[in-house]
Amino acid sequence: MGLKVVVLVVLVVGITEVFAASAIFITGHARVIDGDTLEIGNQRIRLHGVDAPERSQNCESGRNKFRCGRQAAEALSKKIGRETIKCEQRDVDRYKRVVAICRLGHVDLNSWMVRQGWAIAYRQYSRDYLEEESNARSTNVGIWAGRFIEPSKWRRGERLSYKITSESAGASCQIKGNINRKGERIYHVPGGRDYETTRIDRTREERWFCSEHEAQEAGWRRPRR
Image 1: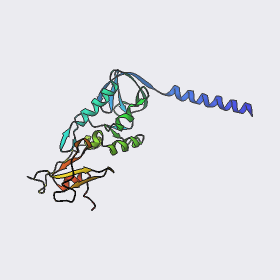
Image 2: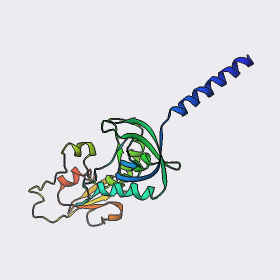
Image 3: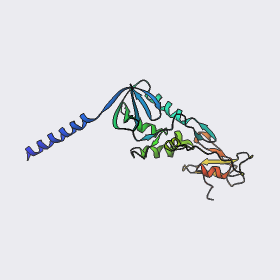
């Protein structure tokens, strides 16, 4: 019985060593191309399982556009700094880029970008970062602070629409978008029960709307009472 156990342990260790030897790593200083692409030396690397806004892509927060693609790239670049990173190859894509999980020390940079709201889980290829995406969405960080087009759809030509309705045309924006203690997004119209006592705190991503349609499109609802 003892001999069989020893043989089994040897086999398991041997298999582990084979897998370790077959892994391909690329290590070095990185140059960030955009929020999900970088270069180490002459090798371009695409971060596995995530999709970040393109560098020229805009997103919306409140009624303001912001350069979310550029900010995503800057966030990744600032995180890495001048440190050495290590990327473990998972695949090679049709553009001959290495698809990899890149780490800065023990930090999974793919995961970090999704947690910070500067990339989404790329469900078409992986479901590894769904939890990080859910957390980022619930805390309204990064691109989740407002509206955006999924990067893959943006690359196919979709853009944010800015519709001006007859309800909001020429009118001042007087509808208050409030976030209550439960995190629920509720809007209050002039004359409503809580309108006068509601205060807008922009640090909590609360905002003004020009129409109920605009508020509903952004994910706010009327009070239930």
